[in-house]
Length: 129
Image (cartoon, rainbow, N blue to C red; front, top):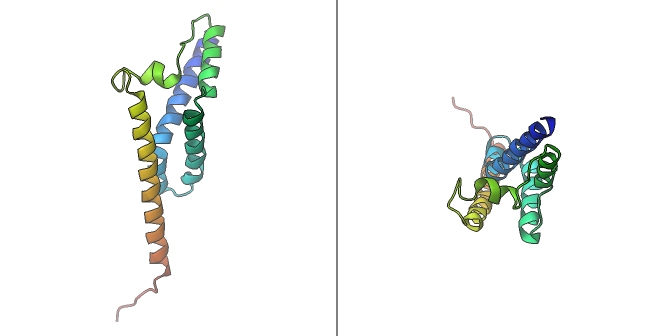
């Protein structure tokens, strides 16, 4: 029972990680320091996809499932939980591209906003009579 609970906790943390990957760059528009954590998540995610290896979070979840007496899923987290549920079966490559496009869009927006705020801060204050 404890191991099944731990597997569920890891599953939820993994979902939070993926949601942060997709939306964390946009959060940085409001809270700029978030960008550093998001850069780490982005680099990690790009590395996993490009080198095609399993995310350690999936391995931890599968470990807890085995210890809890359940058969772990054979695919990765995204294919097991999201493919065919959130998007159509087999749409994971497209979903990955959309996720990475959102990452790029959020970074472009982040840097545009940062540049504008810096330019605004450098402008001399005008006083009215």
